[in-house]
Length: 492
Image 1 (cartoon, rainbow, N blue to C red):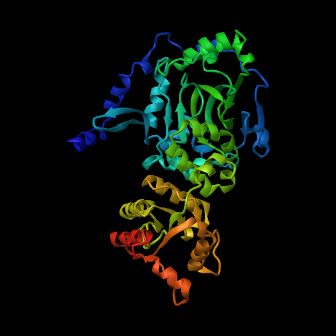
Image 2 (cartoon, rainbow, N blue to C red; image 1 turned 90 degrees about the horizontal axis):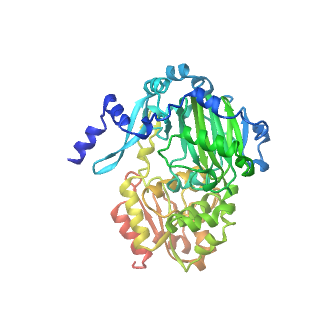
Image 3 (spheres, helix red, strand yellow; image 1 turned 30 degrees about the horizontal axis):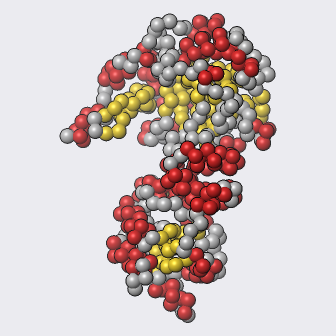
């Protein structure tokens, strides 16, 4: 029954979607009949000198906690041509469906209500609502995937601690499209993040306030209140005409197409759009902010998430982790059982299905193999030390961490070495055991390769007794898991 209902809802036609949107009273309010001309006449002109305009090469230390406008960041993006105006955008993406909002579904998670970009622009050009619908989409799957190909994240804003533990902050990038009178309420970005917003078409009026300003000072209303009302009643009458904004350190700026605005962590900001605006925005927690924000993260977030995030930081940014004493203390513990883990041929078959000559990511990390690994760790009271070649690169370690999160497996924080050496994998594992012997109780190796070969000696005999060799064509099996647990529990 549930599957039938979901199937019906997932094939909603356009008329049904518009019917649902029409029933939303907040976005169809027309109490004051606010028009573009009312906003242009009712709002003061943007004050000169409120924000510094810089080139990408000038972005540095002094802007890490200060908003600025960066010019030229989008040069070379395909979006500068494809997104430059409504006509160009619709030529490439007019029939692509995009989420406007969500509706509650019986016995399931909310379902997206989608219309095509062409339908949205038609709506934006003709509606008379005081609070029009604003596309703020985070779904880049399927026909929306090519949109990301039009974007190149600027190097200056690429650092993101959450990239290696995406479960902590899964929704971090958006395509933002709005017509006249659309915009956002006054807010700060979630999960301690900062953001860049690159505008490709139209104009955006921004107002920003430093982190120390209180919510009460900004007279922030409810989520269903039209954005335009705040701009006319609070921004103009209280903050500008009443002089309060200057006291609070208000930054007022008009962003033009081709410009990127940088919003540091904790800064309050609101946006009002003029014309057909098309933008891309992305949130992140840069490595340089983690130490300052860590006390707040520890105080406000679930401890299991804090511990997992800390482990992820240790694995991908050890230099940042070293600055987190509360995290380091939490990881001090008695002797550990250790699983030295290979990946290919253990967590999925070594020979993966190729799609157009490329390994399909959904064939990685076989669900049963991951379940068995989780079982080994739980029953064997063990942690992972990565011995696979996946240990050698940050991007592969991050991908593995995300897979562990997807399967509720605790992140790994250590690996045998960073680079390959003449000792080979067997030697690297034995060296790790010798160097960390005081911290290790029992240990086991999961690997599909013949890591010993024809080498002999007492240490190789010890290694052979603790090596569970998996079948490269199947990955980890129940029999492998039982033997691994038996070794960790010293039952062999």
